[in-house]
Image: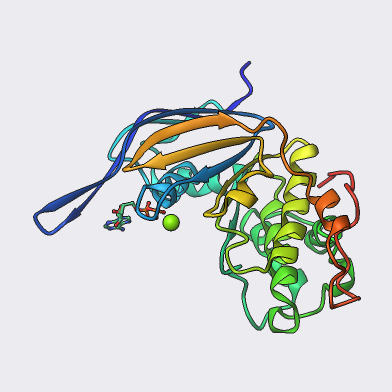
Length: 258
Ligand code: ADP
Ligand code: MG
């Protein structure tokens, strides 16, 4: 039994644009173990999103292999791929991607609907508690701050208890304090055993992770461990307090029991 979550072998992705071929990813070989917390960095156009879409089973490689938790997924059909995605992966996006006129709790329940699970309300409630938003479950996204909306999105990402949480610039639209709060949530989830992979432009955010993989021109340029990752809670404690007094930081490290 291996605890490898992500394993890629010469993973490649080409995009054909008229008579031009863009080599978005070129023979990427990576291994990410269970429990890692990884930042993906690199200049715009270096292949970060392409890589995330492949490891998130949202797209298929042009060539190469991708093994997710021991399953070769590179050539799976759409239905199998969707099932793997629902079972193993939770996504968090820069723009939150919540249903705007739908209460937080209903947004969080959605993946459970797709998975055909019962007790949806109770499970979704628990996920909202984990991200510190138990009090706001009936609020709609437009009644929540950006940071709260992202916490709803994280609750939605974890509600199916996925092994892998992926974020493409999850703090990209948030101010420094709110970004720090979101990183505290990711650090809690990681401390509870979740594997987390985030794309970020910001060195400051990447320093919260345990490993930084830098892409350039579709290749891995550097892959390094962070010797002393920033502790988001510690940094939050040292920052001036939030303007919104009610906007509590998530409860400290609740036990993950979805
Ligand atoms: P990053 O996320 O690092 O900014 P991307 O993975 O989005 O980079 O893009 C890598 C390269 O692939 C870029 O040159 C981009 O223009 C190209 N690319 C990405 N998606 C597509 C697509 N759907 N069609 C054509 N080219 C694409
Ligand atoms: Mg991108």
